[in-house]
Image (cartoon, rainbow over all chains, first blue to last red; front, top):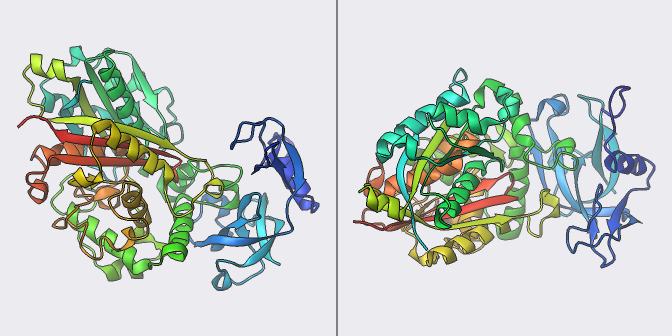
Length: 131
Length: 389
């Protein structure tokens, strides 16, 4: 929705997507060293309100994945697609796995963050490409 | 502390009824519950009602008073929303109110209208139980989230799709005599393995159906039941609720359900029982893998071993721990807002000897109902016991 003139943005999230597009993805680190994702004012682990932006590690490893054949309408043209949860160390991210045949996606695969666009809606999608 | 008696239970048939409204469904379930209880509507002090997607499926918020009206009850009413654990949460709040002396008679339950949305619309509506920014916008569907957990389970503990298939086969077999079930049809392991994939490793037969339906319970204090000479031999003796981080990727465990464990431990302690006392359970098997995670969270199976429970016959109708004798969400159906209270209704009827599958739990005194919301960011567990012969 962020590209249309009439829509509002999602504060904290759209800024993060824009940063990720510029290879400046970050996570939030609290005073006690816990990592989390924006938008957030309070550390969900300890309640600290002292949050700073720290650069996300370049690569992460796939912890689990699935290939979705029955999508929501927002991804109708994209299916089938692989979704994975990736461990970047301080935080984990969920995204679509791109740049690899679906049958080659596996647990343990090292990937890097990339922002792609949904074939169905043209919206930005958090994606993960083999490093 | 006073026990909370289940004085009456009411369920609509669960199934594909796109023309039926939520208010019509809940009215039907409540009529049955009142008739079963012998309690007059005038004695009801509040209605606690579970619903998840009413704004999307019926363009209807503020459903509490609407549903009290549909049930013919003049009393304050509140809707509880906790995704697929909505009516489990509503019942839990009702139990707490009766126990603390605030109320003696409550109507608790839930309803959901889903099939009028179609498969794509219902998939979209269910997906909002996940984190919209960080999961839904990455293409995570409800089956997709459980598929992520299934793959994580296989990687950590072993197991394969065929193990999960036995869970679906078992629950369909249990539903055969249950006339309220959406599917009264037996299936084979091969049916599950050959079904179209939805979100690998899960296929069409690993998933519960999209359903319309309602559930209602008339709950009373022990003193009210005794004063009015109610036939209400089953009590809710333990209640628990657990919570977890919203997005799956923020959880400590991808192949376990800590929220369900928390809820189970609280409910067991509340009732003064442990897993060894449990005779049977209704657990939230929205997908086959969900039953595995529930069994392990409730200590009915050791961690990492729940995957083989159905295949090896431990949880079948004649096994040592029958699970989902109603047919479960898988075969009975899953009108999400109705599900939690419907599980408690099934456990009550099984314990009271009034269920078509009661013969499989003859002599049982303790049953458990486990209701999960989203990818188990919410969970409620209730312990039910026979307190009167």
